[in-house]
Image (cartoon, rainbow, N blue to C red; front, side, top):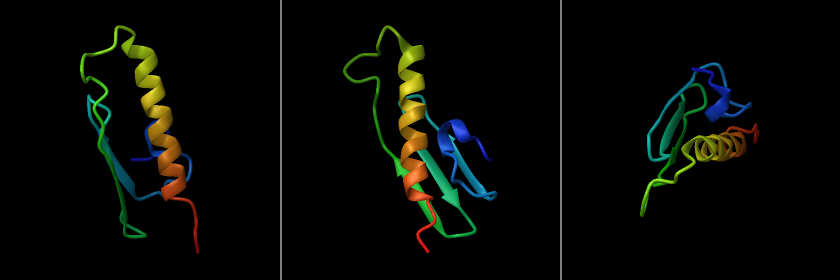
Length: 74
């Protein structure tokens, strides 16, 4: 819970989620009834040689999308 590196800065206190090796992730906000699933495959057609920088880029992408989805739209 509250892992800003992939959940973004706007995720609430009751947001939980999981990331996957290929870049997929799932997030659920139980307070607001919002779910987010990112399906990706960063290993296709082959795994990049510089996996650390790609992991950083994937986490940046995940957190940006989460910030958009979890922004307060009331």
